[in-house]
Image 1 (cartoon, rainbow, N blue to C red):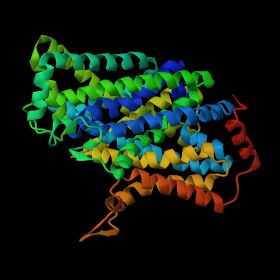
Image 2 (image 1 turned 180 degrees about the horizontal axis):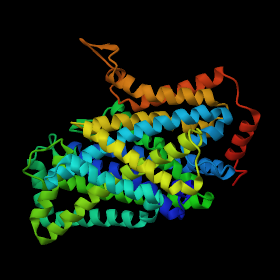
Image 3 (image 1 turned 30 degrees about the horizontal axis):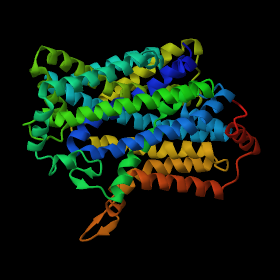
Image 4 (image 1 turned 90 degrees about the vertical axis):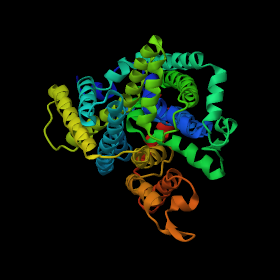
Length: 483
């Protein structure tokens, strides 16, 4: 297996569409959506509307142009590799910075997700969390390390169908076992943020009517998907516009159906878990739901086992995609492109497997250093990566004047803006000081992305224009001459 086959694989548009969908909706959908709906009510819908908007933007604009650039240069395998090609030989520094950022942040994100998965399965199976971390990461490292993206591509249909079917049947089973009338009584008796009507109202979040800043914050969270290197990198494998159109339809149909059944599961779980007290612990929520299903009857025991497989696939899909992007970037962007060592491409499979093992070990070690975890921390690191990569890649595909200096400025700004706007208490709010996010009442995504876009444009305009050959190539790609 050479590096190109390892990174891009060999799959049909349907498999690529399903792989991108499962990667995007696995962790966000299977793990987060039912839990957030259980906690906050139907108002969480706006976050997933943001995901759908983002999917439409990615597939309708970025996918085509990334595919065309990859067709022009068979050496483009990763997002950092694309950035170097886009800005020429001097774009090498952009490539190095982007790859280092992706590698470090991806390892940290993987460690945080792995720790959360270990907490969940450790509580359910009463096992040591570090042992579970090692077992999960060993499986993922062996699979991705040896087969590359093909491991996800070839299992995409099975995963997608399994997730959709199991969750759909689980919702029906819970409704039939509990009964609609009992379910509603339980929900009313649980004191759900004042009333059931508020809980099921998409204009309310956690019992409070949504304000303008709430809509902005919630929808903007979905935009982070456009900064995930693995998802964007899948488009380098597409062959033509027809393939992308097929993948787009598959992705949209699956994501909409999948979010619908997951939303039903989250709502039903609120009534099914009565009279348990509402918990804001993910591991406790999954444990309670697992035990409740398991206690119902013999069929419930089977469904509880399937539910655990679904949860595992939710965590593992995110870990697999992130690990794949990390391995690819280490090998292609650092070792090969950086000429750090002489590479014999006959040994690509072996070399990639060694890197995979090292990345897997690093992820486990980092996870063991994490004593406590929360979704807030995971989302901060995901937002940092998304607010750096997403605006930089997007502007590079739509603005011909952007140059390598602007790209570097964007990557750096995105890297520092999320923690700065979220944690730096620079503004006085009443009696105390708070961050910009506290002042505006929104999360860090929108101001961070705006800062990144602004810095890219400002730095690009005050530095020399790109060479004409790169502008010409940009125009050819934009005008579909290469398709």
